[in-house]
Image (cartoon, rainbow, N blue to C red; front, top):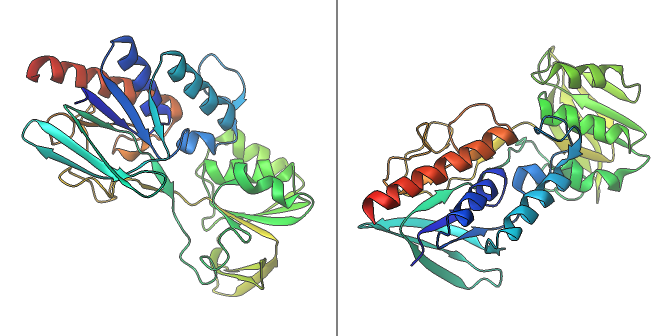
Length: 306
């Protein structure tokens, strides 16, 4: 029986784990991967105390910090269900080899983050990993010297376009709106980059290809269809919370786990933190703080109830 199970190993989960370790709690992390959305981020210039880094490096530092505190991380495991029976939680799922596992705990902190939203257009699923990607950090280097497109209008799309401009010959940035929602510093960098061509008020309508992607189609504000010849398409149009396994927890209309300022859900002993929650402003530093807040709330709960 554990005091706490942390589900997820990104900014929120790993930050919480350091505090849990320092309090000598009986706990571990269960996570499909390490780093989450942090590891797929490009340049990072707003993490306090570090003027410049990137997502992969920061995720590695998070992991190293946790391991230095002897945190146990069960990597590669997928949590499929969390049930509360009396005062105890049953956490079950799949091991990397497909076999089932189940653990029991007095409390749970869910920090599972989000996954990329899909376009939902013809050809997208067919050419996934054949030119269609949702991770520029992961797949961008495969398109050195080629023409590519990034789709989206927020920080992720802007960062993607800038990363690709250092790799590709040309980058189309397709934005369905007439403006960007991202940070001004990123918008300025994109607007001033000669390798990036911005296409506003363009609704992506199809992905084309043979064995691999060779074009993307979009409709302009007049409804006219246009085709761009590209070898790669990077989709950055938002994220969907990884909350599908949360039976019993209250979710909002976008499937985010509803929490209060202490990270408490509607189930006593169940906490959530980071991008999977309804707390606004999805930033790494906010997720890290949420993780610590939820952990300290769990400590209070355990002191009162166990």
